[in-house]
Length: 336
Ligand SMILES: CC(C)(COP(=O)(O)OP(=O)(O)OC[C@H]1O[C@@H](n2cnc3c(N)ncnc32)[C@H](O)[C@@H]1OP(=O)(O)O)[C@@H](O)C(=O)NCCC(=O)NCCS
Image 1: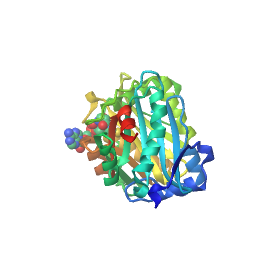
Image 2 (image 1 turned 90 degrees about the vertical axis):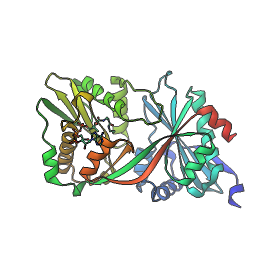
Image 3 (image 1 turned 30 degrees about the vertical axis):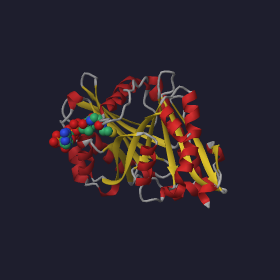
Image 4 (image 1 turned 60 degrees about the vertical axis):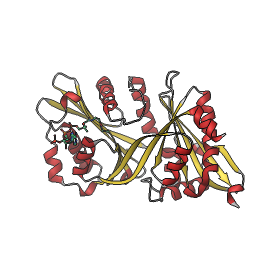
């Protein structure tokens, strides 16, 4: 009887998220195939459903069936400018939700995406049979497999971290929390650009140029949504960028903080800089933020160097994600 009931999709401004959305989110988070964690009403409203900023806009839709929340869709327009053609649309669904719910949510997100000139969709989903058959039936292409891993921060080996935290000769490390000091913003933009080197496998995605406006805007959005960036930026003695790492401390639930980008410039790799950045960050967190007991991270399964370092540190792989890509028009035709 359920599948024939009407599905009603409506926009979800974060401020109006009620108990039914909270219940749905926490039920979704509890599933074994995601690392999402149970949240309270403030974390849901401020962190999860944050509308974004100039650089990255987030829109949410909610699907109801018979008065029950049965799914959420999130559309992320990254790099808000008229030249960028990519849009990310993610569906948060109960496996029992059925393809009708997925189709209804997808349609609501696709129409404004296309109207805004976004012609290529990418979507991150738990790598489970239901999602795999959904996206392949819609004609999307599986572009990358993502390893989602978690570190119990309290269990990394302090002696190993101390050994790692020896910056190779010829480099210095800048460190800050929150907003990047104005005097370092140009170097930080250069550091951010290094992540363009991360493996893409079959994912088609342009290099991002990381202008100061863009970097500042992402930073402001992170802080406004309850994240505290902790950044280490490595430079050569001539002042050129050599590497960076960033952790986003979750100020609502520090035990669910995030290891974000880590990258070392090609010319400076395999000298211990990657490990030095990770070791120093771990030690700074233990000293100054003991409530940060868990870090999750997402890496391409194919990223042997990063995963080797993470595994040595004690990160444990959990549920996998898959990124799918498709032309927006193709998806719209497939669900119409
Ligand atoms: C991952 C990365 C930051 C490592 O930086 P690094 O300064 O070279 O790191 P280190 O010198 O401390 O350690 C390198 C280790 O990576 C591992 N590694 C490097 N290349 C590898 C390969 N092809 N296969 C398997 N492991 C490899 C090894 O364990 C190596 O240690 P070793 O040199 O003692 O053998 C760097 O490769 C990088 O910037 N990659 C591109 C950006 C990226 O993918 N970032 C991660 C996504 S967030």
